Figure 1 (cartoon, helix red, strand yellow):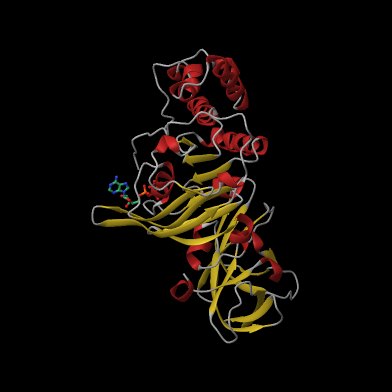
Figure 2: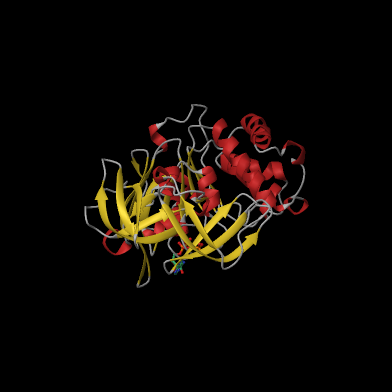
Length: 379
Ligand SMILES: Nc1ncnc2c1ncn2[C@@H]1O[C@H](COP(=O)(O)OP(=O)(O)OP(=O)(O)O)[C@@H](O)[C@H]1O
């Protein structure tokens, strides 16, 4: 979606280090309405100090609206936004002590790199000697020291985005909002920028980051926690690894990484963690992370890379007829039909992959897969 670039007018930093609690971002039942359309419904989320939280979700799910509500560019129709203990719901953007970077750089074209970075400091009356010291520090942070005298048009997209990040960080904000900061860059630059953002956060561990992206691999790479949005609501939230391994519903399982969601019946808890289920006439075991009730029906979430070919009769085996085999350099992607379900698996490349129509047996490690409730009751 095209958006008008907005730059949060930053504040002038004090030399004091970020007070840890002061950088918490809190959404408390925040609703946002455009005309008759409510695009954020009672949205509640806390981003703890020093954390990177990624908001992901389909186009139009309200990710950017949530971010812009924190920045102060949209006014909630209900609820509160807190930064630390401060209720900032009605504060102007430049009073919120945040930095923001949007997808299309939004640098001032007529200003050199160093002037762009100095802009926020100067606008708030920072002393020239402070600016002189801070601008090179920020350019060094993003590896752009040698480009200080260039104009934005003389930079690549990745370089412009580094400058935008330096500009956002110049006033030492406690909170950094990133709205699809890498989406205008090509895949290779995106990967290296992701590494740089991760390093930047290691260097600034008190910085609280809210990161909006539609790219789940960016979210998994960078974020401590991930929120998955749909229709202006938070549908799932959790630690990145936990959410990936134990998605709380079908939507989360399908949105965050590829997943096979096989319909299974008759949950029989084995102990506090594991349960048996039936998949057709086969008995499978899996983690019962969400505590599904005895006798209930649900889904078992098996990631394509969780399957291994079975040689003998392994536990947790299923078999099926190969539908497709695709070599992708570093992996083979295989689909097979198991009792009417199309199942996807990936494996290390094989010299003799199975052929279409062949019957294969595969198994998975019960500890690696999770039972997932159907969305209707738990979504
Ligand atoms: N200024 C506006 N006026 C009216 N409707 C708007 C405005 N801004 C956003 N919307 C609508 O609000 C909903 C949420 O938009 P938002 O940009 O927050 O979604 P998103 O999840 O960030 O989407 P994308 O991934 O496509 O950027 C969409 O239906 C969008 O059309």
